[in-house]
Length: 115
Image (cartoon, rainbow, N blue to C red; front, side, top):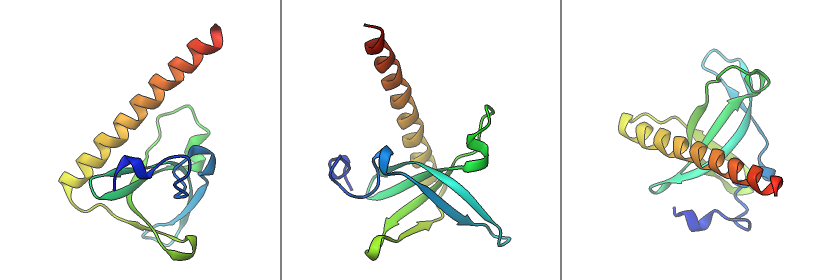
């Protein structure tokens, strides 16, 4: 899937204002509420970055969960574990680039506000 698919009108939920919460069910059966940070393409697949909601309120560095993301019919989603090390590295690199781009955009926005 290409970057062109993800824009203000793509309706996939990738825009920040459309992001919400996802409840993960862990291996032990407990549930964890997570904030959707972003949905982004890498190669032919889409991926999602999730931040545990209870960690979002702390100033400490938090663990981010990365999953393969599939939009199903009737607005349901499916999250798939990334099993392949090479795939995980590519996804982690893309997410790091997203963070770098966001930080750069924040700096540009601050400069514009000062003018």
